[in-house]
Figure 1 (cartoon, rainbow, N blue to C red):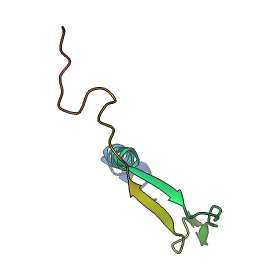
Figure 2 (cartoon, one colour):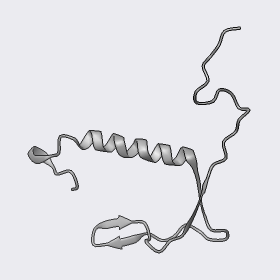
Figure 3 (cartoon, rainbow, N blue to C red):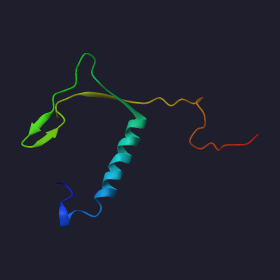
Figure 4 (tube, rainbow, N blue to C red):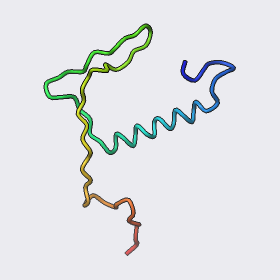
Length: 81
């Protein structure tokens, strides 16, 4: 248990969990991720009782292209005409 359990559980575990989710959402919104062409999902790496992603697996990561004509930009305000 990374955050402890029972009486000694970390009081900030919920905050940490939300922070991890926010970072993951920001990453997924800015980058495209895929496996190499022709490869299937890599087998998981099992060590004792832990399931982990294969450390030798390769993924392709590309920054997403921003679309300029798709509505309001990050600093534009809604204006009534």
